[in-house]
Image (cartoon, rainbow, N blue to C red):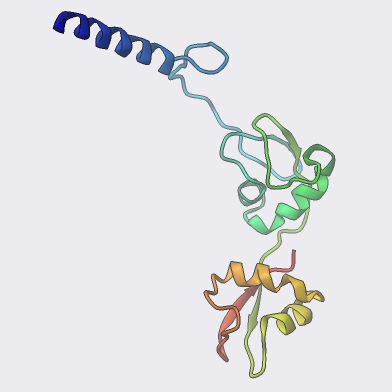
Length: 152
């Protein structure tokens, strides 16, 4: 009985190792090094695992805030889902001016809605500004506090 248990455990272990080393296409995995293409503005770029429009924009332009430009240039490929990139998707990286966040210093009577209207012309962008600044309570601003304003 003990010998039968040892044989079963051995077979299960071997099967586990075999299936762990085979990917979904049925090919065995390789430990070879793959050169990853760096995104460059004005060129095409092929999406790799872990990419987002923000990270591609950071690599290509030095600023993640240009993700909107990358999305606009690739709307036909990405449909209405800028947050959903598939490995192997070809993206066009347009030549555009590098965008940086706008800074705003809070004055007496300010709130995120009014700041967003003044800075972006759209009060609804206050949510993005609150997230960008990691505000635990968006209703609590301090005079002199410097905020990064996000309009896109």
